[in-house]
Image (tube, rainbow, N blue to C red):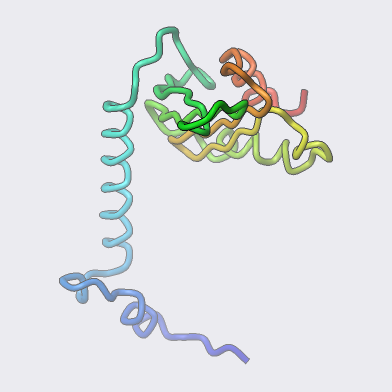
Length: 144
């Protein structure tokens, strides 16, 4: 039987970073979220600017495609992108939910994963990256 810890005991166990022993968990959480947001913003600023506009749900995307094998020829293309602002959880989780419902997800030539600000796309059996409109369609209309 699992025992429940009192909030003060849980606080002592979870607050292990030096210098944060007396900080309430909510304050540590807010600091971490602020830091994560600043890092995501820096990633966006430093990400490659696309030649043409790339958007998902009206949110700008920076990043670029590369081959998954940098040494030998490959038919696997990889995109890592950063959004200029966070997507809400419903929109960010749409591609994942649609692929999870699909019996053919392992055969799908384009796999997409998203968080609030990051976009990862893997295109299999592709000598070139897919058109961005195909990625957008799969994200914005995952059930089609």
